[in-house]
Image (cartoon, rainbow, N blue to C red; front, side):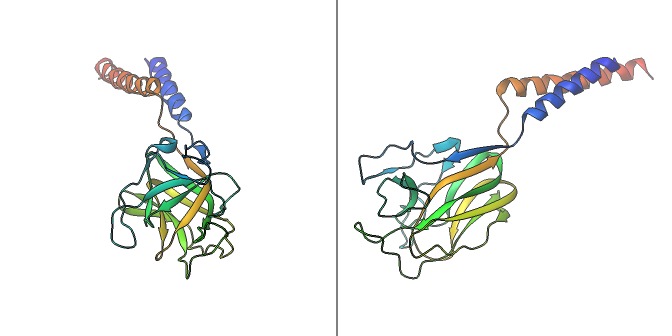
Length: 215
């Protein structure tokens, strides 16, 4: 009986060990746009997360969402490849995750007001990355002032376990982001879940049988 219980515990420990933190890099380069210099909507399920759509904008509407652009005169948060930005000036936007997120870091920059050259926004607001578990704030970065030159700045935040990540601005403005690294605990594979359930059931059965044998 003891050997059986030990075997079940070993199986459970194996499953739990497989649920380790992993990092996912989001470059946005695989998002389709309609052509050079054009933008396309960021898929709502991009990267396995659920991205915000129809969020409040600075002028009172509900059109805020994320888009991806390959026109580098607008912004260069990381390099000359595609990047995501808060379309329609949507604020406090982000994504939700089924797995708990423990850190996010990425490159952010201001967007331009001109198609021909970089023209920064007047009086841009600082930005930060915040993590929430439900409605509870579980970690955030410092407020970062983005460079008026359009150069990207790295922003990093750590959390005690968040299911929602929000890119918050202290006021109005538009920003671009690129090369986001998201570290989270992945959901276990279905086979691992089944193994864990049967292991727990076996452990409970073994304990019950042991209590019958030993008064």
